[in-house]
Length: 271
Image (cartoon, rainbow, N blue to C red; front, side, top):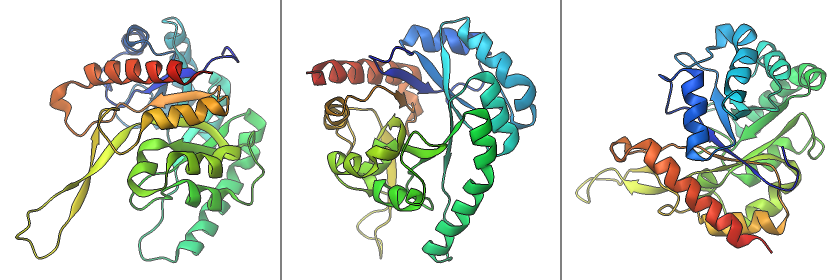
């Protein structure tokens, strides 16, 4: 990776049916440098075959000019070892908070799980990237920083994947969020959403759901996010997650448009 530029990646979750060569060709044609590869059931590399298939997947994607910037998969030794062998720097996960249990107890449990993985992470030069996520997860920059407080700042085998979309729907202003989490960041996600009412005014109580939309139309101001990253001379991976609530608009079209939008904002943000 060129140290003077960011790497644009896309989460390959929308395309489980594609072969790896097809996936690489599509990502390259859309303008991405890399993918985040799901290691999940039903995808190109399922968890039970990660030890055998991830290295081969990295080679097939590289033949199309596309790297694997990160893997979204289980936080276990087998996946960590496979990431190390394939040259994948980040294993992205979320920190799940069990409903009904005291939050501070859940933080302690999660840290114990991370500590058990540190020997494998360090031995294989892989970073466990913890992403903020709405719902029953560690949700925003403040909570991520609190969870990771016992660990040194990045580069460290346990770090933060800051997601601008999830921060916008359950966090704080992007400049403040980046001030907080900056020392711990190993990767940045770009997505966008807003809260949408799920029932009508005749209901006894309002209910709301997150609606995932394109980069121009949600609560996350991508211009402000990218300007804040540019001011800090960020040169890491920016992953567009290509997750949209309405698939009828065409995920590929929306991902292409979002990448063009993000790249234009990034160029605009350069000093």
